[in-house]
Image 1 (cartoon, rainbow, N blue to C red):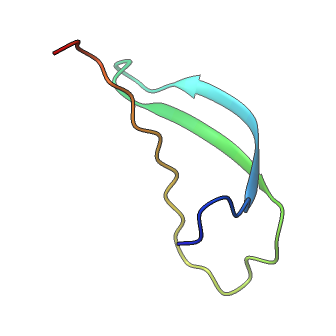
Image 2 (spheres, helix red, strand yellow; image 1 turned 180 degrees about the vertical axis):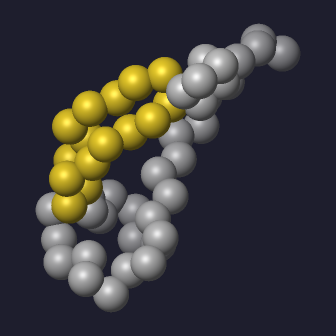
Length: 49
C-alpha cells in the first residue's frame, strides 16, 4: 500500500440492502489489468468513547 496513491475515482455511491454497507462504483485512474480484487475502506468512528 502506498499512502496517497489514487487508483480510482468514485462515480456513484449507494446504500447496501440493509444500510450497513455502501456500494461504491469506481472508475480506474490507472492500468488495473493484472489486479483481481480491490477493496476500498474508509474507517468511521460510530460512537464517542
